[in-house]
Structures are given as C-alpha cells and as structure tokens.
Amino acid sequence: KRHIYLHATWRTGSSFLGELFNQHPDVFYLYEPMWHLWQALYPGDALSLQGALRDMLRALFRCDFSVLRLYASVICSPPLCPAAPRPRGEIGLVDGASCEETCPPRALRELEAECRKYPVVVIKDVRLLELGALLPLLREPGLNLRVVQLFRDPRAVHNSRLKARQAPVRGGGPGPRGPARHQQQHLLLPPGLLGGGRAPQPQHRAEFFLGGALEVICQAWLRDLLLARRAPGWLRRRYTQLRYEDLVREPRAELRRLLRFAGLSVPPALEGFVLNMTRGAAYSSDRPFLISARDAREAVHAWRERLSRQQVRQVEAACGEAMSILAYPLSAGDA
Image 1 (cartoon, rainbow, N blue to C red):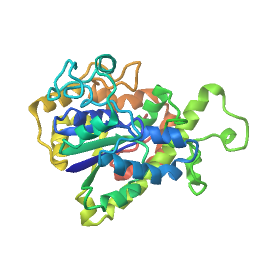
Image 2 (image 1 turned 90 degrees about the vertical axis):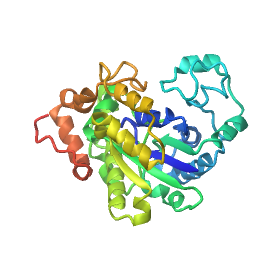
Image 3 (image 1 turned 45 degrees about the vertical axis):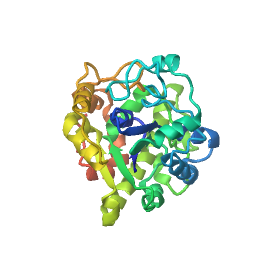
Image 4 (image 1 turned 60 degrees about the horizontal axis):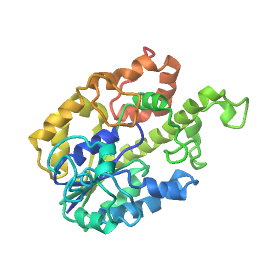
C-alpha cells in the first residue's frame, strides 16, 4: 500500500492538485483532514502543533478516522452512497450540495473499511509547515510514504490571498504570531502592528496580516528547498517538487509525472479532465475556494495586473531567495 502526502500551503492551487488524485479510481483521498485538530488546539503558534499534526497524519494513513468527518469523492459514490448520480470510476467534479442531499453520513468504521480497500491513500493538507516535520514518517518502512510538495509564485499567492480576503487567523494558516526566533517574518508588517506608531487603517489590516504570513511561508519554503537539496538518496526517491505554473501550463505532462511518482496508471479520462480544468473561461469566480475550471495563462499572470509595484517589491524582498531557487524571475520594477 502506498501513501502520498500533498505538502502545500494556502492559496497555491493545492485543492486543484488534490482533486486530480481524488478523481483517480485507485485513490482514497482525504481533503485537509487536519483542520479538525487545528481547530481543537488553536490558539497556539503553528509550530507547536506540528508534532500533533504529524501523529494524526500517521493514523490517517493507516485508515484510522476516529477524529474525522469526511467528504471526498469515494464517499459520494457507490458503495458508500448507492444513490449517488455518478459511479466511482467516472471522472468529474463532485457537487457538494448533491452529495449532502443524497449521501447520508456514514459510520467511521465503514469509511475505514473502504479506505483499506484502496492501494493508494492520498492526503492533502496545508497545516504541516515544513518538510522536516515529515521526516519521521518518511523513515517508517511500513508506511511507504511519498511527498509531493507544491510551490507557487509568491506574488500570485499574495494576490490570491488578498482577493480571497481570508486572513490566516482561526482555522487558517500561520499568521504573524510565529516563534520569537523568526524575527524576519514581520518584514511586510507596518510599525503599528509591531508595537510602534499608529495602528493600520481597518481596510489595510487583512493585507498586513496576509503579508506577515507570506513571510513565514517563504522562510519555510526556503528551509524545505535547502533540506531537499542536501537530502540523501532515500529521501530524494520519496520526494518530488511541483510548481503550480508548470501544472497549469503543461497539465498532461505533469499529471503523467505525478501519477508515475505515485505508482498509479494514467486514465485517458483523467488526462482530459486536467486539460479541461486548465482551459476554463476565467481565472476565478466570486467563490475563491471553489474548485472550478480556470484559464491557465490568466491564473499565472493575474498578479501582474492586480498588485501594485510596492506590493510586488515587498513580496520579492521577503521571498527572493526561495524564488531564486524555484526559478521565479524578479520583476525588476516592471510590475
């Protein structure tokens, strides 16, 4: 049995990546299951929760769902939901409202039994902040864990977060309340949030908090990239990186690479699905957390039109080293 963890952060396209695995008939897929533990243990800085999150992840990969209430493609299709409009093997997005209407809640033991039938379990989450937290699981020979780490241009991440207006507070991501040793995380925050000067105007607070979180994320990315660069062979074989931009520009090629890494076949219908999902008519909708077809070119370049030059410079100052390793060119002031 193989286990895949999709290692990502907020607003990087991770829901889309996870949906590609969710559509595969040989995959039991869990979408952000660690939200429950995050909610239960918050407040507390994000790093203090990493050990508990890792232990929870280990249990989930072993199909122990005692703390969860789940919604995934496998639950919205037979045999767990005989009334589902689409059979499990058919590729296509799940309608959440229809699932809730036609598919009653299932006992956790039924979900655990169904999970054990699948050769591959895939979990996507955004609350394990660094690759290093996964090393104990990667070393477990019986777990057979592989990690796909998703990156995205930090300027696009910042633009997407501003658009979503979801400051990473309760239930969200790492905010500007990280540990004291990460002093540089405040680079994008004004003096008013650091104890000096006037507090920011209400309309700017979301951007300030999002910027502070982005600084934390870029620092974590840099540590992950450096860890992967010097990793021993056994770890390199169990780890792969993916840029969101590459996925939406070359969807079929990247899909084949990811499925090969996971030891999965490539259904032709899934190739058509990923192509259609990256050839939508628009970049986003008024519901930014909804998985829908997007225009790939606009999704990649939207930040150039929507961020000010000052915002671009701030992001590049905070994330420049990680951007360099990931081959994201700096804007040179032409934003």
